[in-house]
Length: 160
Image 1 (cartoon, rainbow, N blue to C red):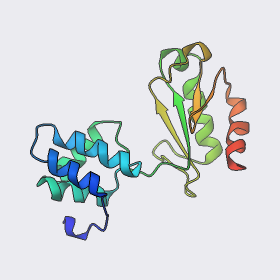
Image 2: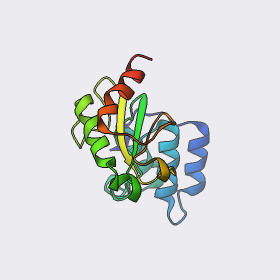
Image 3: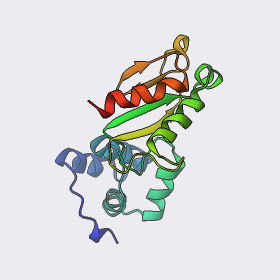
Image 4: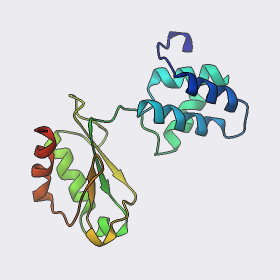
């Protein structure tokens, strides 16, 4: 099964897997490191983790899909993170997500655009509740937003 995987892990990641492969909770720790290295966990990476930890692919995917933190699609070059913490949600955070997805032609299942330029993801809290609703693009913070401002924000990064 995993022999078809053509992914190359760094020496550091391989050493980390070797250190953790027999410890309790190993898959969560290992998958965090894989995502840290690649930005997401591809099917090939999941196969390689299953092989290196003597786990089934079903078990690896079970952990990946249970925890919302793990991404199975490569994020876009420009990462739009929209806060859905209580203050942001109540002031229109979901509307910002819906508008960004609409502008970019994304369905709720899509993480990133076909060209790989943008990804849109909800996050639990950015820590700027006084500026609600808030989003970040590549770490740049935008607050007190309305959905009419989304096109301008996206255009700024399209043209950068």
